[in-house]
Length: 380
Image (tube, rainbow, N blue to C red; front, top):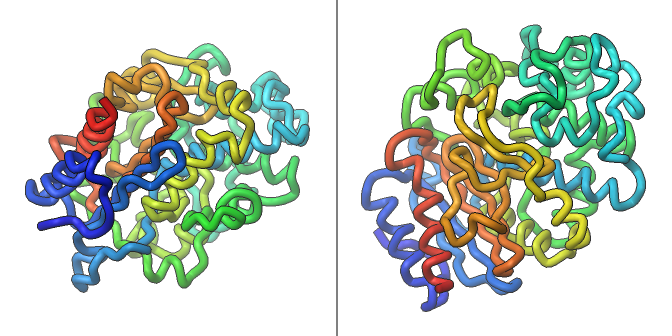
């Protein structure tokens, strides 16, 4: 199988790795895009968008990118902070008074972004009727007590990250994160990237397929320390898209635009986001440096592996595998099942990998890492 699209001859190794992922049987459909100093150097795609119908993956095929969303949501907060609409160092309760209940009055907006708030789980089961009512889910979190002393440790807020930050955004901007993304980031730049996908976009999106057994939103069974009733499972499993037929493929999930995992994008669109972010075109370079500076690192109370975060952005760690050549300056975010968005300001590099075969363990979990490594090798 030979990929479709464009690959600068300097990056032929990237094309070979992309093709090898298919040859190994690790892909159904996938796309990979890379920009170097603002110029597109890789734009590849291949495979099928829907394994049931055989619909091919095409140049404009979007797909649910799961937690790659978090980097975009974090950027919205940086954008609002630049405009003086939110103070990231201030308590959340300053803009969301109800949040102060049960000892949460000292939790800052930054702690929401660094996964230090101690609220990785929605304790009450979220019904399907609330899936498109983010303020209702946020209200549930406002009524909870932290599971650990806020600011004392970090643990991945897989889903709650979005409902917490999304409510702050809504209160300070009078708009949802998705509305700001459309109006201020994706729309003006022509990026195929939606946080709250219209039904016509959802209809042509690739259909996600499990590459391995999964529960909740799909991933915890593949991680060390997983248990049926453990914190990881609870963090990943409520609200649970699998209450809907097709799970993350359901139009309700794509339309809801959950700010932690609801972004629908093409690889080209997500890479274009990182291209413009690294270039200082979305927020100032100084703001980006502030946002990507490592704030927490070490054992993650939820995922039970070492992780590292800036303000919503992953930094290199066991949970964000990055080629050694990018270890000091790369940032971004992975998405459940294998997706990746990454920027490297020092090298003027931006890349994104999207796919529809979800794999979190075994060699298939390294598809994006192999592609990123090939990119860095080609820069040498």
